[in-house]
Image (tube, rainbow, N blue to C red; front, side):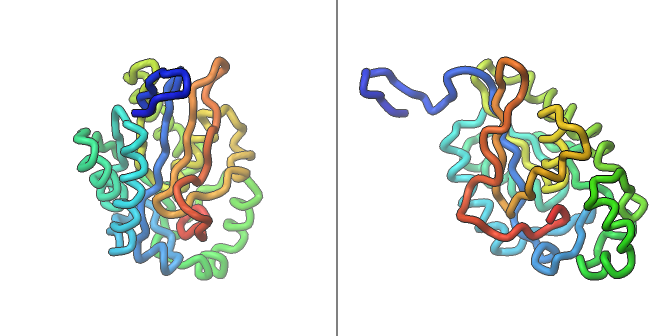
Length: 225
């Protein structure tokens, strides 16, 4: 709580509108090895746990009203750090999982380029591609964005929701909530481990207020780099 020069008391909440904080999980060993994780359930490294604890202290200061998380271990463990500080319960939802990428999962970036080069190039061009025989990005947005909106609708008028998920899922969800065409989602840069983006409710819908916030610039290590 802070007091302004006019004597008004600030609670740390925004003056109007709801906020959605989309928070990527901490580092995993597969991130370090640049292996495509997808829906594979990979745990955090010790560094990843430390990242989650540091970020949780920062996010707790924003006084969130609710936390919803992917049920995969790397996201759930990250969310647990914020829950421990805020006393909030975490709602886990498999719809917030990372993109299922079939045979790409477990492969390094170099192996994907070598074995599936044309498919990889088409994806980077923004074409609708089932990477490894898995999900389209639009299908990820179809399952994740409604979950985020459903929880956001439960917030008070000035409430804050923290969504703990994965780089690719967060990017597609932001793109969908901003009303961007799918071919433009790639213009949203990836998130570093345990960094977040903030959407604010405006008069004409959701607006991107912050992107990849939370740390000094770090390399993006993950499925969405």
